[in-house]
Image (cartoon, rainbow, N blue to C red; front, side):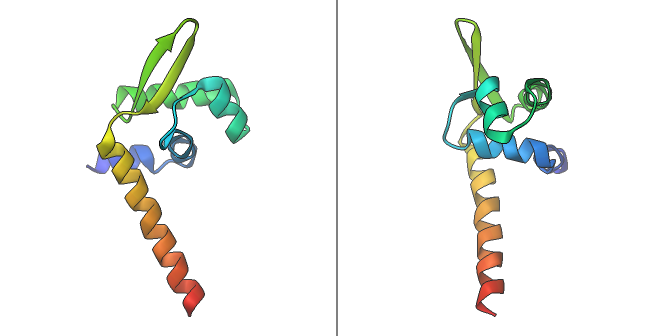
Amino acid sequence: LSEVFKLIGDLTRIKILWCLDNNEMCVCDIANVLNMSKSLVSHQLAVLRKSEIVKSRRSGKEVYYTLDDEHINKLYEIGLEHIEHRMKGECDE
């Protein structure tokens, strides 16, 4: 579990997960959305794919990525809910 949190705790990788939350995207699209180089995004996607955080499928020359399964999606979304809840509490004070 600590390895999973370590993998998704990296700022660049969490931004990639944000892109892939309920979306399928190629490296070029992710790089454009995040204003990052394609090589940086590709490297981080390889790390995430090796750890089964994301999965890929090939369509012609393009490779499309999504979150690996609903567990990863839930883990990401629960983390976001926690942050939003904390931020709302700070605003209410």
